Image (cartoon, rainbow, N blue to C red):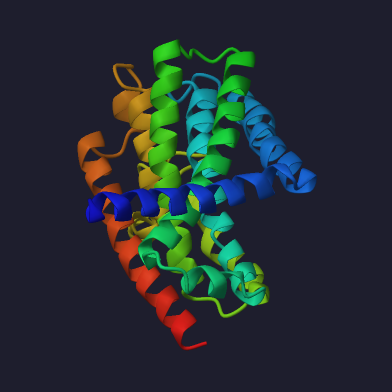
Length: 266
C-alpha cells in the first residue's frame, strides 16, 4: 500500500510539473508562434529549394529527406532548449520550493522533461500536418509511427538539455553558449544534407552529436521498405534505438545528479 501511494504521488508530481510547462507554452504567444512557424519555414523554403537544386539526381526525394530531419530536429531541440527554463526557475526560487517537497529529485526532473516533451509534440503534430498539406506520402499508420518516434526523441532531447543545464550558471550564460552547442549539430546530424561521406575528422564530430541518432532514427522509420532506405539511413534502427536509450539514461542520471548538487550548494 505504501509503495502504491508513493508511486501515485510521484505520478501526480510529474503530471503537475508537466502541466505547468504546457500551460506556460500556450500562454506565451511569441514562443507559440515562433516554435510553430520556423519548422514549417525550414521544410517549405529550404526543402523546396534543395529539391529544385538536386532534383532526382541523388536517387531519393530531397523534400522527404529534409522533412524527416527537420521533424527530428524540431522536437529534439525544442525539448532540450525548454529544459533551460529550470535556470529561470532557479533564479526565481521556484526550484527551491519544489526541491524541498517530499518527492524524488528524479521525479522533478522527469516532470520537466515530460512537460517540455508535450510542448514539442504539439510542434510535431503541426509539422506532420504540414507534410500532408505539401503532399508528402504519410499514411495514418506512418503518421502515428512518426508521432511515437517523435516522443522518444523528445525524451532524448530533454535528457540532453539536462546535460547542457549542468554547464550553465545563469540564463545569460545559457543564451550565450547554447547556440554553439546546438547549431553545429544541424550539419553534423545531416538535417539538410547527407553525411554518408564526411571527412574523417567531421565524421568523428558527427558521431558525437546526439542529434545525429535522433534524425537517423526518424528516417529509419519513415523510409523503411523504401528503395532509398540504404542511401539515407546510416545505421540499423534497432542499434540506433539502443544508442538513444543508453544516452538518454546516462544524460538523465548524470544531469540530474549535477543539477541537484548545484541546488544543494546554492
